[in-house]
Length: 282
Ligand code: PAF
Image 1 (cartoon, protein in one colour):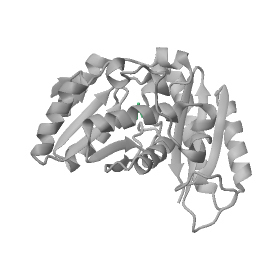
Image 2 (cartoon, rainbow, N blue to C red):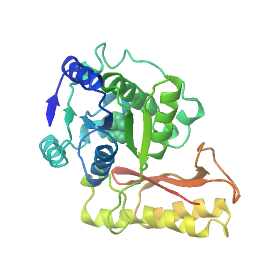
Image 3 (cartoon, rainbow, N blue to C red):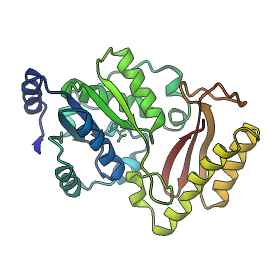
């Protein structure tokens, strides 16, 4: 694996690869790698010639400074895992490489309603930050394929929109969520949960399954309200949302229609950690 820290160095390597017609796969991460990230890397290794992975904890996507400061950094272990997975290139930039004009001089993206619902509503500015960093990384890496996890369902939709509005010719490949054997979705944030809290956090997965199993027989209002109550009873301190939405647009849906693809989404606090998960329903 070759490690690049500057835009200039990685760009010249990318230029060489492009000249050789190598298909480039890209897995952007914020580090604290786990099996979920590794599954993205494995997909990229299968489908492309060269896999580039970035590790960059992007300051502009944290609406809560405490969350940014507490974001786990495990770079030595990350490098070891990336070596084991035979990643070809690691891009490990400093903030100045990504934001040469500073973090306040940044572009605004017209993301429409996607920016103001669900995650967007509870984390104002978050998706602008995600677009700023992903757009910049795509300009640098110029990948043929971009691999992202379904765990961040709305993020995948935002990136799809980014590719459209910026007319970027990169294929977005969404990889299914990796879970622990008991169902808990893998997340870098899980590192901040005690074993007991992890067990209680399973309530999210149980709620999603309950919604999936009862989607035809129970009103959506009852399913989402009962879901939120269940999470609070199971030791969650706050529930941002339990929602059922159109799987293609993320617009809220009130009634079951067998012709419509649906997704259930949850965000809740297992104090002090905010967890998200989702499940497609049909
Ligand atoms: O999903 C993530 O880890 C981040 O949002 C991403 C896509 C690497 C951008 O910082």
